[in-house]
Length: 283
Image (cartoon, rainbow, N blue to C red; front, side, top):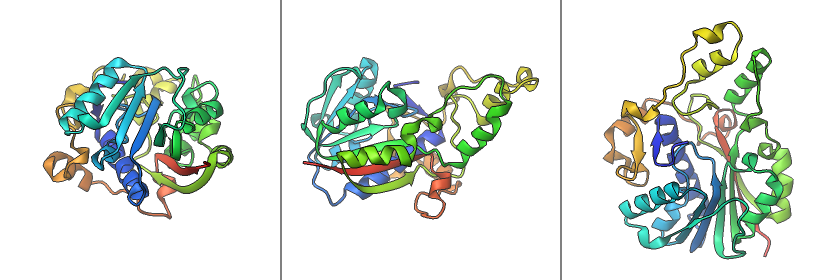
């Protein structure tokens, strides 16, 4: 995973989707400080989900285990004029976290990556005095359904994010209720295209073909450098997601050509690549 740039229209749309959701959820709430980390499973630059709160005046702490990723976060906050509202900490998942130090804590699609997701969830929740945001892969998206249908035909099969128990509402919701009250649950990042569940630079078609017998030898390999194409690449020198999107005509035009369903309660679950919970923690 490249920790210095976002690559692709899909990642760009995911950025806009999580920022819009957090703005909607937190607009009427007093949040003066926030924490995100120490694992971030964003397919792009980690540690940037709470910049919207920083723009509102909150102080944000980003904890990650990669110094290069932290340097990129610092550079983007600096570019946006928010450097004075950011603190970064080099943290491994096993490092102790301060308890009740922030008004809000966020964990982004990290639970399937840790050894004990319930313990990790509790640790992150204890950093917050009031609010917890948990974002997860959506196991109900139609892209996951396609992957399930194809798995029996694959030469080798491995567990994927949508198969992990932590992403299932029936598993995660009881754990969240032990921590507090679930205030909101939403499916987001809902473009028409399926969640690929493949590495950057690859495509659903080529990745699928390489997993299947006989046809695998005819499948193209993933691009070694997904950033070489030069389109929809955003980093410390060009981060348009918190500025008026009119400032990036190419991105605006590309997004306008694709139908999205984040605002549709009827089909968001089918198209959403992720789902998220807002929890009001017990005092």
